[in-house]
Image 1 (cartoon, rainbow, N blue to C red):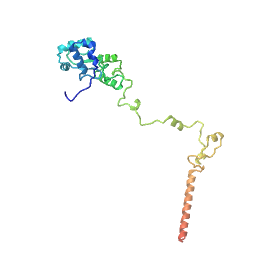
Image 2 (cartoon, helix red, strand yellow):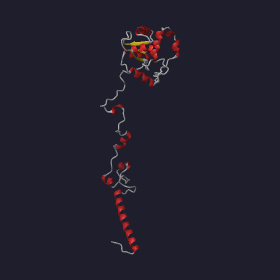
Image 3 (spheres, rainbow, N blue to C red):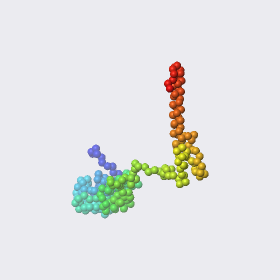
Image 4 (cartoon, rainbow, N blue to C red):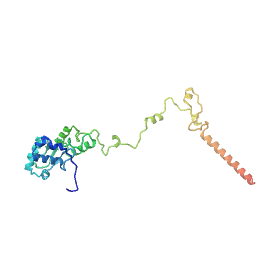
Length: 253
């Protein structure tokens, strides 16, 4: 045996003692087990068979394989599509209960169901694939999907992908919108840095209120900065005079 072991295939041991299986001929049993365990099989147990490969695996020539395949089809063990009666070329084989009695696969598992759909998609929308989907009551992989994938020329934002541009939230938009009854104060009040309150607007009297252009004492920031500059210059001159008096020199004018 080579180091390559291939895929793992599981079969329940009860199959060997099944009465319907025991009624098959020895050649039919060998062909059925070979189809179930061959490397060409897939998770769906629906695959393409080459007559020469099947003859090599079983050791039976085509004249023996033809009646054996017919007996398996009539006994509803398998279903075939293509030149399976003449063995003139490759044909599709579906082991009807191969997926149902597979110990390692469950259609309830999303990953297993995805593997089965991937295996079916390799054969196209054939009648055998349609019978498989109807037998297991699953959706055919060739039906129209509910969500169409975007084309390369279409913007991805239409299909739910994240976009770089962010739209403002409704709360921010409500804050930015001005209320109908909230009118700004007069031009003089705005220039002086006062913002009238809502009650003052209703009463018609504007009370000084610290705004973005005034400090907490109601003084405009521009006037405060100018007074601060004058005080800084005066203190600087006083410091120079004190320093000159201390050194005994006359301060410069």
